[in-house]
Image 1 (cartoon, rainbow, N blue to C red):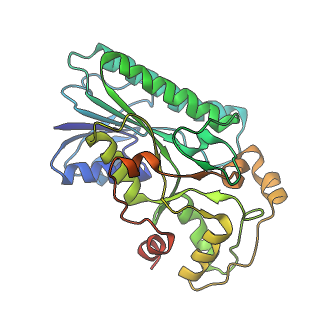
Image 2: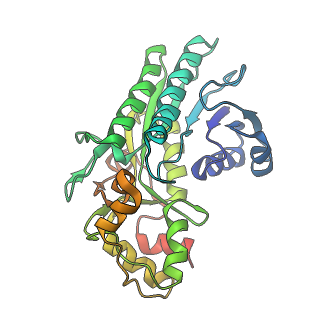
Length: 300
């Protein structure tokens, strides 16, 4: 079998591509620059693209497509230009991918496309399943449009799954990598009130859910990639402080975060008590269902 991975140099993409190579698949790894792809992914065929249009021949004889490309959301304030890049890098690339699939001689059977739990907006203590209504803020709108473009591939007979990724915990990237230096210095603490729910997930389980979505025919449409045991921000900060043997007593007030980050502060202050109902119902078994075990693996 052959699999194509876009965003293959990213936090999740490179791990997914490595797992596919280890499982014996032929892997086509697509990214902006082939040099890091070749260095990070021995055994995969590396292709460069412009972030929207796939190079000719990229989809030849491909069985599974994993589409993870997109401008980082939490790397700075959201100017209007940056918001346009965040949206277009997801929506236009997925639209282009769907068009290329429709024109290919043998359309792929499965498209597993990234999405995000940001689709639900800020929902307080409400438990959220894949059937819950969507939010109406900027990120929710991006995710709505993103998933709509992915669903267009169903018209050519492909099965489509949209993986709504939560807060990914990993040693070398994402939220945890940003938090660790602060907490190890003893100046970490809750964000805002700390009451907001944090739909965290270990990076190994994100990769596992992407593979599960590709392999299990029952998985169609949205699937939440989150732990079955979400915690509040206050609970997460206490657990992280304990893991690094430091107090976690220095809060970051919500007003200060809004002043510093502007609209982007909603990423860390929003509350999403998302649950992995589809993953659980279709038989996915989490490697790290509990936060303490995840942090022990990643920090200890």
